[in-house]
Image (cartoon, rainbow, N blue to C red; front, side, top):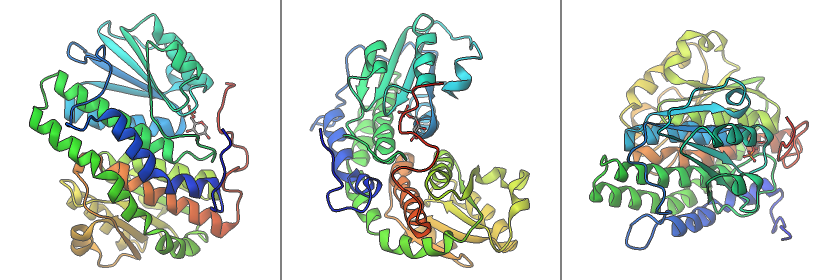
Length: 365
Ligand code: G6P
């Protein structure tokens, strides 16, 4: 397949813009019109003691978000690790456990080695991949495609949100199998997932505002990203994205952990990007944000109408997203995270699609 930029300046911009469409495809694949889940019969999570999630890079952060979902929606204990650590620490694995590997390419050397380690030690290995003909898809007991289409930009964008969607559907299946979610709960969550492409379109409309903010962000030496709950791994992903393509030092932190170190970095020149939907943990995150502002940190608050109304005072800048069902907020908030990295890189004039020192797929250790 030849893939072209279709009028966009970069593949990354095109791939960011494609997300409502590809997420829609993935949804149609995994959710039937009647709201039931379309997953292989053999995926029955009922007797499991543990699920192990392993990946590298952006795919690892998708696993880190999914841990919150499997725990809260299915009460299933989850272990996660980056593949390069997992493969060498000889982790003991309970017999009644599965291991799930997330990889855009399906070829990443460390993730593949981790899969091979688990193959003879767990009940089932599952590969969540974008390339159906990949080595991981062949070697795992079960392969689930994420339906993102070909991704060319080295910095992963649409593969990330499609990985999240696929993992969300798996967490819902686990919740049903384990008797945690009722039929009605499942239907409500399915509706929430179906709303995402529309919400993403609204989020893409922030692109010009973000491009303006990026002019200032491009001047920064360091940027902090904060979030709580499932938005914490999204803060990590936001920081990774910015590092990868703009070469600005960035760190993601759990909002509540700020006072245990990174707050020492805060001064006027440090932008702090806060992902804070108006959810159950909102007030906690806002109080961390106020600690930042009290030290003259420049806060960019990414929230919804309610959140901004409650907490915009004293912030440097704001981005308003539509309201989204609480568990799935990271799928929507990924878009501003990607656009912040993209526009900052453009403002700096870096090679967005081929950032220095990075490869799309790392097939050697
Ligand atoms: C490389 C890419 C990242 C990607 C990671 C894992 O570092 O630059 O964008 O997240 O590999 O790749 P995979 O194909 O396993 O998802």
